[in-house]
Length: 115
Length: 114
Image 1 (cartoon, rainbow over the protein chains, first blue to last red):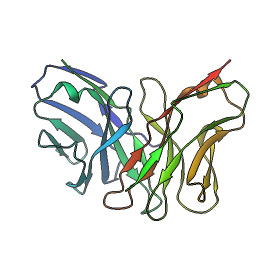
Image 2 (image 1 turned 60 degrees about the vertical axis):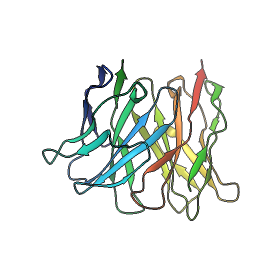
Image 3 (image 1 turned 90 degrees about the vertical axis):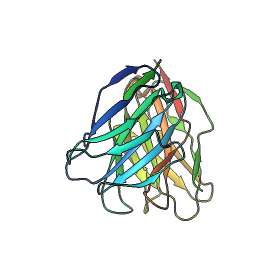
Image 4 (image 1 turned 90 degrees about the horizontal axis):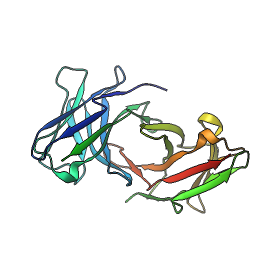
């Protein structure tokens, strides 16, 4: 299976602090997604990113969130001022395949704990 | 709007027995359906998908899923369960519009008993 990597694997932060979660996608694939999974709940879509622009975002993805591709390869999710309810597992995914045949491959996730 | 339902939070099965993890979906238009597995403290691993074609889809680790349009179901199956199959299983449907993000079910925890 194609490999998407994420760093860090775990992060603990204080409420109000900024966090940056990083994803290294599969080479040469331009469609990225961020999802989150609050403990014990289902995986929820946050945002999709294509060709260096946000293509779609959910209602969860408010002004505290941003995504970037700072160096042309890594893909980041920033939370500007974390809240307790941001504690979750955050997954990056990369879409591979032609339209209507594609598959999303997920990274191992970053577990974020906001205290 | 798209959605999936996994009616069972927990499924227990004895090792060597067949297993089924249920999923039903609701979409407008043709469904694009996926199964992912999540092992403890790990990410989501792709198992299989249905886009078009044969209703029986074969995937990784001996899993298969049967697409049933009349029942709007996409149940995951395996003829003989292994203890190592114990994990959390998620059914997902692809958004038909926009960026094609996935909508996930609530997950089913499969426990295979030795």
